[in-house]
Image (cartoon, rainbow, N blue to C red; front, top):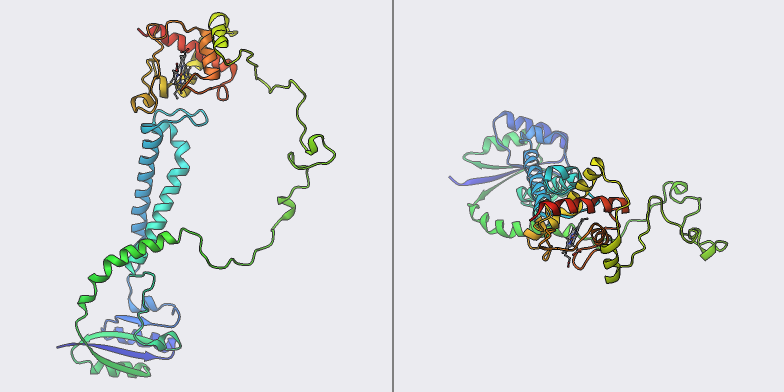
Length: 368
Ligand code: HEC
């Protein structure tokens, strides 16, 4: 026997609700209900299952977190360890606090975006999709209950009429299985496109600009250091410091960045510090943060960046490789850098550079 499409049309949501309950009590399965607005409680009355998207969300979040862990590990630990803000960079765990924002963001990002895609996909929504309502009056003031029914439907028809349907239509339907596959692949790509396009700014007109919430707090009436001031020197609020001013703790280094300067540092520069166990430890720690990515933990020139072939030509500190370097020349090189090696003067204070130099000498004495 062929299937029938049965439409019961209602013109009031209360009557519809009662109808739904009555119909379901008799054991009929409602296939779909079309309404002009969301009717509260209709989902429960119809017996719709609750969504399982929360499980999907958890899986997507876990995937995002896993991806973030892999990404931070590969980029910052394995492939190209970078020294950012003087944080050690040898193990993922030690750096984990610094990666927290990335871990958090990627978790949320994946959970949110993949959930939206899942939602669209599951609901077969895509841009340009035609509305599915079989009767356009459901977009105005009518409610439509749809059944796909096999067999004698006269009982259902009269039941619908009894519960207050203003119209009952019955239509024979042909098999509609064919229209499933053609739409899946284009839908998937369209959904993807749609999701991506939601990232860009839209052409929609801007809303009216709002007003400033607390102007007194945003725009301070105090003087801004770099604002214009006709009465100030330089026409600027901020004054340049007195000539010769240096910042606290800064020790000027008068030796020039030249071959002569290098030679001078090599020959005659000596550490002003008295070395003890504590300062040696500081030197070692700083070396392990700032230098080992290139020079290696024991100074053999085989740091991670060298092994990964990001930097080449990093020498071993061994006497056989660098016969002439001294405390002074090492300090000079850390201060100014040399060829491929950059200056570390902005990261290490003068005292710290002397301590690191000491550690380099120690490593050198242990190398063959
Ligand atoms: C980005 C990689 C890199 C980092 C980080 C780095 N170096 Fe170097 N270093 C080099 C390279 C490359 C050379 C070889 C320079 C040349 O002679 O062309 C070098 C050379 C040296 C030399 C020999 C200089 C000479 O007189 O020939 C010393 C000493 C040295 N580095 C110490 C350090 C110390 C101490 C640190 C940490 C504060 C450090 N380096 C950090 C890449 C690096």
